[in-house]
Length: 317
Image 1 (cartoon, rainbow, N blue to C red):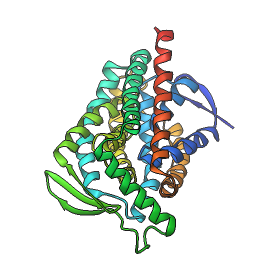
Image 2: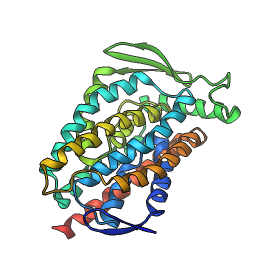
Image 3: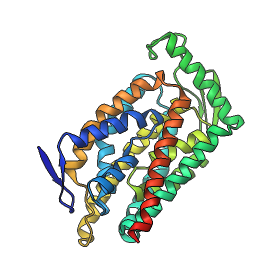
């Protein structure tokens, strides 16, 4: 059974969209990324959908898929709610601004691919540099990650094991957040997180990813936070901003009849069904996978997509 999607009229098997989303989300959700940034090139390059609606459809995928992963992280006691709140406060207004920029200034597929390729290349390069030349901050995060994984290997039930301490908030004010994880204490500037999230929200709104694919690597590399803690907060923040993104694109659609702006609801729901299963599997498997493997996987997929986008630009000019 096939389905006609997008203004291109591309035919896609009903089973293909959920399968692609499941595979992508299983891998990327371990790093706090929904996988929407990989579904976008699938829509553009495979299905031939180049209108702004691809961004809106990505937001819809996030809304359907992410709750399963978030619930799993909550169950395991690895949701850092203060960090999640700061991400939402910063990215929410940014993603709305980004949606307008996407529709008004980047409707052309060539300009959009150039922008997306450069953003992903910077993110992938920054994460790669962190892996090759770790800083003192990332070394502390690595020590906490190693202790956490060692404990979960001995006691698989993270939520109830007495020798495994879930993430614990020690202090939280408007200016700073202090928390403990894996035997290490981390302090984060809430002002810096909010400012960073605002910038990321604009970029994420343009790209249709809610900011998760950008904010998670930033937390890991720039702020030196453990990936096992960042994942849940990044996904929860992405969920909230994507809810706003879907609503905003839908409301803007009547004002831009020259472009397909509203999400493709059928395709987005099919992506979301597969993504929900993948999110849950990824969140459940994460504690069994070394943090370095998760980070190297993110680097590989991000740089692969960036190279593909930038390589296609000369051909489209």
